[in-house]
Image 1 (cartoon, one colour):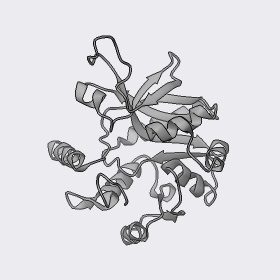
Image 2 (cartoon, one colour):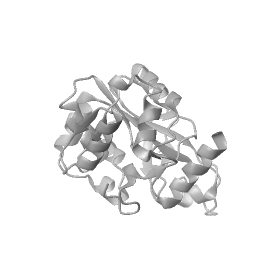
Image 3 (spheres, rainbow, N blue to C red):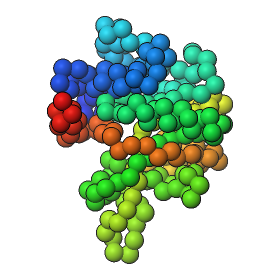
Image 4 (cartoon, one colour):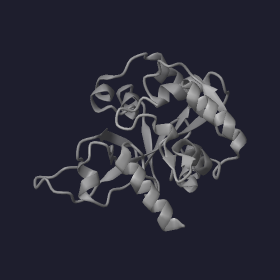
Length: 232
């Protein structure tokens, strides 16, 4: 709700439904709604969820990141693994969520995160887009808002971006949350996944579709509306 670039973002209207509702509906295409929760610290979002019959979990208003918020949820809802779909992903592909679930089975005990190819220079150079660089086996080397991987010409050739679907084992969430402060690179880049890297955890990147459009500013809302109109 306190987004500086788009105040009140979760409740922004997108063709008659809130951004949050659209993200929830897409998530419920992957899992039964009984297994899908909205985590929030804001009473207005809580009220919105209850009106729509969405399960909602209240967390503290001191969470440093979305992952810290999921860690608080993990203290209320018992599970071995938690899949986090960020609430600003109204076009998230349900199959992408299921692919992350499959990765949990294959890479038990690891943190999982999604990525997709970048197909234009504008996205590659945008600081709103977290860029991903991986090892050959798919483990994360680094993630940055800078235009990486770079080259001597400074021109876009290829790149990969983060897709904001995560999965964490309970133990990793507990340790993440107990740090009580952001790590140096996490703070600098404003990317919470870097805390895991800095703490010595492996992060397994799973290639997902390019369907998602993360909503960070008003222009992204227009992109989502255009995509929805194209699909109707």
